[in-house]
Length: 328
Ligand SMILES: C[S@@+](CC[C@H](N)C(=O)[O-])C[C@H]1O[C@@H](n2cnc3c(N)ncnc32)[C@H](O)[C@@H]1O
Image 1 (cartoon, rainbow, N blue to C red):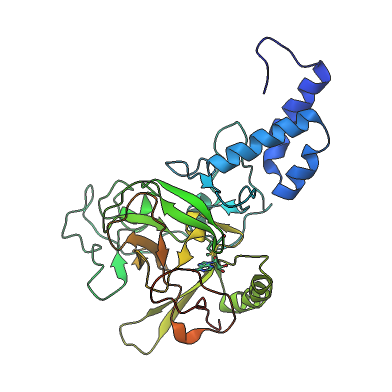
Image 2 (image 1 turned 90 degrees about the vertical axis):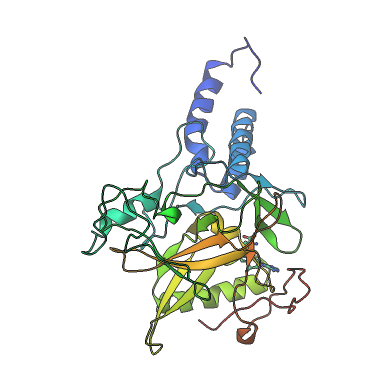
């Protein structure tokens, strides 16, 4: 901590200024290595780590999402933060985190520019009415919902874009001794509220299969928590299905911390479609009233598809004992 009134020697002040700019770009192992080089670097590295621990979203979400670790000394998990899914990792693959300046830019905010909106959408501008043709669902028994989108003339303030305004409930990321980090409610959440979208990299099925093989190996040694999700949307004919692979292991949002529960958990997973978007978005809504501090969970999949052996610690009365995993 700097003492009021006392000035650092000029050389140290310069090192501090430089360190404040550079250290937020470093991954944890490099940050730790730099910290051991001098007192000034150590104090800047500590401040960077503290700021990182105070907000997993780096200031990109409306409310900070702090890390809480009652288990060990591990600070946080390192990944690039994006609010929406991306088709390709931004280059270079880096984002400052824990600096003193303004929030870094959200790499996923550029994604929409790369894909001009297609035709379609509603014509209810300036405001969408309750009978807007884009508004539907989720119907009981289905996991599909429609919202206005890029092809609609209405803006983000439209009432039919609940899942597009970002996260509005307060959340925190809490470490569990067996499950690793998990996402928790930091306030009471009413049933049916939008929690967050599953952001990450959209992958081709071939790339998803390749990565899954590597992740399975790393996960079985306990060194890695993969966050690759495969979602299948069955078309009305029932004959075909659209497969969406989203990998939040390197880039994603707070959804990458949501753990599995064999009883289905307290979140509903809804595919949200919008005019102008080719792919559906995977969104989480609260399936029931959720109390402050409760962990947010959903079911990763069916028990029948278990292939590799990660033990499940969901603690539910119907726990199968192993995490679901399917052959991608
Ligand atoms: C999407 S990540 C969830 C966040 C993860 N816990 C972390 O620390 O980053 C999925 C991984 O979390 C762990 N996990 C999730 N649910 C679990 C459960 N019920 N029991 C044990 N581990 C779990 C597994 O390692 C799984 O591969």
